[in-house]
Image (cartoon, rainbow, N blue to C red; front, side, top):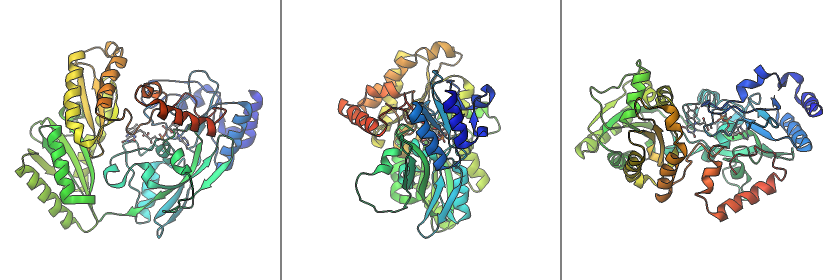
Amino acid sequence: MNDFLNLCRDAVGAAHVLTAEADVAPYLTDWRRRFTGKALAVVKPASPEEVAAIVRLCSQFRVPIVPQGGNTGMVLGSVPDASGTSIVLSLTRLNRIRGIDTVNNTMTVEAGCVLETIQNAAADAGRLFPLSLAAEGSCTIGGNLSTNAGGVAVLRYGNTRELCLGLEVVTPQGDIWSGLKGLRKDNTGYDLRDLFIGAEGTLGVITAAVLKLFPQPKAKLTALAALETPDDALRLLSIAQARCGATLTAFELMSEICLHLVTKHFPQIRLPFAQHYPQYVLLELSDSESEEHATAMLEGLIEEALEQGCIVDAVVASSIAQSNALWNLREHISMAQAAEGKNIKHDISVPISRIGEFIRITDVALQDAFPGCRMVTFGHLGDGNLHYNVSPPENGSDEEFIRHQEAINRVVHDSVDRFGGSISAEHGLGALKRDEVRRYKSETEMALMWTLKQAIDPLGIMNPGKVI
Ligand SMILES: Cc1cc2nc3c(=O)[nH]c(=O)nc-3n(C[C@H](O)[C@H](O)[C@H](O)COP(=O)(O)OP(=O)(O)OC[C@H]3O[C@@H](n4cnc5c(N)ncnc54)[C@H](O)[C@@H]3O)c2cc1C
């Protein structure tokens, strides 16, 4: 392997081929610190040509490639396995914004650009790039595209797939496919772009993308509503959609325990109500007219929801600081749950209309099987996507609880399947859910996926052991 590593050094410079234990360590453990793999080296190219050169070497020496962006993924997709035979291909040096076209409303960016940098560059050009998630300060657009990330604005703007007009990709043979035309219409055969989006690095390496930009809203208003049940949240969603249409940009459900854990582990974050309620909805309006227009719309919505009895209380943020404080509640849930101890995460989706029934039935099934377990349920209700996370009973043993992971997954995922849902709404499959998904996909679906994988990556060097 020395020949291989020396050729990698020739291709990208010796300083960008990391092999010392301390240098590679940060790239080997996943964000949740659940798994640490091994790698031959971490290679950090700085251009598509350098990526292509490394991929060609990997193909020649049959070295598996694990593409990595910000390493914030939740499903062990971006870390190598324990064999030590693969390289981690870090894309973080491909971080140029290649251009912004405010007439075409697009921007062309390299895969290693951090999401927040892209949002800021769009804002500086007077535009909005709406993809937004709690990891935006460290995740990269290449990772977002490869996982088809969702986030908090899917309701209005769609998943990352909907925000992308074109890709540049290095194929497993080391060729560069440039599909960066930025067209809104192009029906000239199979949609290669859509193939690579959501492929989690198993079909090629994304090196650049053309992203859609939108007008900046004139006003943004955030409110937190208190409710009794998830079904009430669905009624509120219907009213909000009927009254606000596309102005409604976020609709997040959080159960009482979520905010209890946030205020317990982050005491500086306060609940803006004098008492606790069983459920909360954080909603945001992004208005293209004016602050007054947005305020009137939000007040009308809250009034109607109170009249119809689907909410019991509500607060509206009257400043950016207050809006940030409300969003802080939502964005600290994962960290608060982690601070509470180990938990078992489920990133599921079901048809929006069935969410209330899904929560009721699955909660009962889990309580019957694992008395005292705590369902820390929150998520993007407006997209039918819940983070249905399960924590051990209060004062219960983490280790004992985690031993039941497979049985708990079975209860939750079988329930998701019965409700016609998906066991991975936005995080992907990675290595974590690769085997699990086979239970729920048909043979035909799996066979089609295999056919694609083998046709595009016949040597199987792209992120082996992930997805399929
Ligand atoms: C606090 C927190 C909140 C989150 N919230 C959300 C959320 O709301 N919605 C959501 O969808 N996700 C969320 N995530 C998950 C994660 O942030 C996303 O999956 C994100 O898109 C991953 O980007 P990344 O750059 O970190 O990719 P990585 O973790 O580095 O990689 C993810 C996958 O993409 C592949 N990959 C990375 N870059 C490339 C490339 N250039 N070419 C080919 N393959 C590549 C990797 O091999 C891996 O399979 C959250 C994570 C955290 C830590």
